Length: 332
Image (cartoon, rainbow, N blue to C red; front, side, top):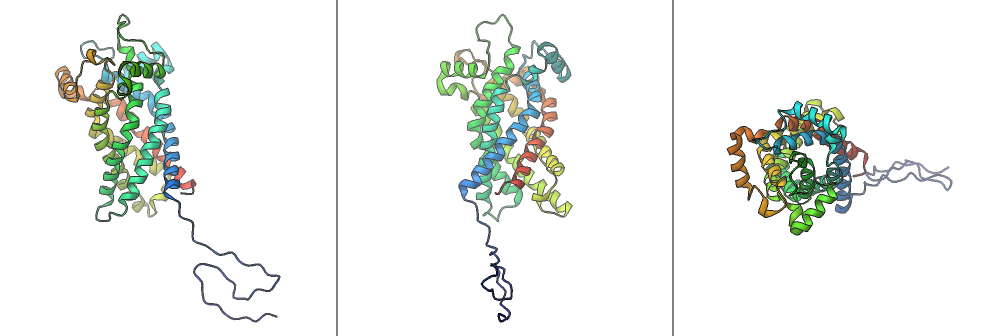
């Protein structure tokens, strides 16, 4: 029989304390896990963000339609007296499809936008991990601000196409100076014909002005409250339940809109304006803000706030649950 003697412990491979015979099987080594490459990490972030964009659009688009219509209706010729009136008229005049008016742009666009958003945030947050002189909240806020700037390049044209589809119902049927769009492709074609690539970036300055502070607070708060919730539960942030993640994401969505909603109203005014530069009501961000204030003071900047706030919890809860649950099931 083979001799027996103890072996020193090995931290990488698991051995028996018996020397093998010719008929025995070797126990496989417990090799360290292979670290994913930066490209693999980015691809995983993009895939999760894409799925999150689908979830957000399905849940949030009806609220967004009501929000945009309330934001952009003329102050001196209101079509809607509030959220419920807007919802009932949309349902009565257009059916359920009315709530998903222009959904093709955000469905495809949100997939692209959220892929960009979470892809950029993944890269920015990994870059900030080495800055241990910053708190978790500050690291999340800096990464979120960088993310907001990058994502604006994708979000702005998507938002423009959606807004043009949503607000055309506010124009009088007798107004033949602007085309009645049959879909987002028609909007894009008209914008490109009128102003070239700059046409689909109408309102970009408003998107950038909103996105940098909004995403800074959005991601910074999510990371902070997620860590705080995990500590209260006595577990790791990655092990939080979907319900906890939903609550964290929903609260981040509320903070996003409460802090920057007036900027979103300005952005909607710029995007819903005439595509022809010579026919536009607003020459700039400041001009749009001045016109809005003249129409109703500070309250004018909060028109449509209720549907936006109602949308923020389920839509943002849904996207973070989707992203975080997929993160548990994906290899990296």
